[in-house]
Image 1 (spheres, rainbow, N blue to C red):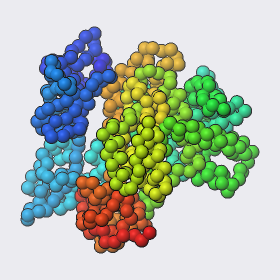
Image 2 (image 1 turned 135 degrees about the vertical axis):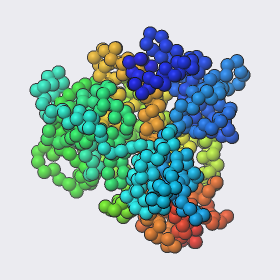
Image 3 (image 1 turned 60 degrees about the vertical axis):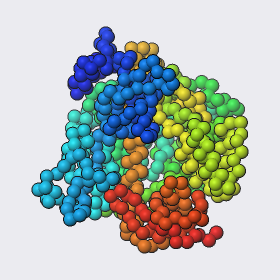
Image 4 (image 1 turned 120 degrees about the horizontal axis):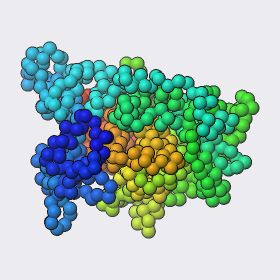
Length: 634
């Protein structure tokens, strides 16, 4: 790390670690001493773990004694040199807990109140005085600073559904509001005036349009298909024109790294003045865009020529997915000459993207795990759910974006790649055993692709396509960001990155900055962008998991409150797990709620449809307990 990249807050740690000889310094560059490594603990088993070392091409280290370290903690470890076998190390220092914040609540038990962890009911390090405990009510919820063992604030009470959002955000210290200095920068930019950007390509005459969910406000991408020249234009919001490295705005974007999408609202990565206005590719206004222009060979479906450049566009129309699907079904007509041209182009583009998908799925995978859309009311109570469907309009946009992301990844050898490693043989064996248990004939082919395709074909015949795909996904490694390419197993791509969503993903913003530096031949700026890229890739991957956890846990809390209102009622469900714990997933008027089966019988099988009765709900942990009371007649 360069000395000029170090913040005042970080400087005290750097000096401390220099003193402990964890670090060395040469020419204003800090590096870890060869005896030491930093990383996060993973795969904790029987008081041993592996340290996922921060850095490029550095092997994980085996840790034998954990002391009080826990999975996910940030560790400095001392390498144990001269030993045979797996490279190993011992913990020198725990420098950060995986969870800097946690949630506690007041529990009334054995005739007295106590402050306990929300997820375990175990006492926490932080305390309230007897007077404070008396002041607060049973069920009051608090945000806890785990580093300082300090109670930060009262979030509300567990009886109030509105506290759910506060709980899931507070555990990762997320918040909607932006500091005033960040907002000041976001509000400082003038409206786009194309005359001020003479060096940008003027693409305002092209028929760009956006296609997004009906509720979307942050339009990241617009497309235009030039059928005469077999050329696809993918225009992406040029966030890097506004969010420059360092400074309050960039620091906040790094801290958030992702926009978070809850059923009723979003928590944006960037202030709404940018994410929903100036950067968003709104219709009928000039907007700055970073554009991939890709010429395709229609016979081979290969990109024969591509270039990426800064441009000004003027989106002609904002569509939602439902409108485009209605047009493809012949249920929507063009209202004017402009729409006639756009619809004609989209019709021809659909032929291309359909063919691209067929080609892609010869090497990649088509997983159909079910996504649930949830509707909640103004009091934060669950109203309804429905399964999200991938429609022709979704598929069209997806393959346009995949094409641009692939082209972006070809432009550099070191940067931020989106990688997805193949599953381990051990995980595949567990998967095959599970599937054999439901009557599948597992035929191991020459490649994983052939084997899984055969499994998916059997699943279709059994009517278990989504369920089996979910098991296959669970058997795989998690996709993540990395500074060096190692391919994307799920998509079947040799190289892949994220380029198309810089409004809501920080990784895409880094890719834009890097590509601009490469295009300008600015090696100094390029190396500047790539400084600390290993740690940044790791941090962004972690932030992605946080955002996903927040979204999942919020929905679990809504399901739990709904279940509490439906105690002792019976519903249809499908058994989703039989190992360790028997679990089921609701498949009735409300879909997707996960249930723990309290009285499993020996004749219950995986993916069997059953009738369950909701017996108990733990609102604190958002867990629903149910008993199987019958089977669904087929």
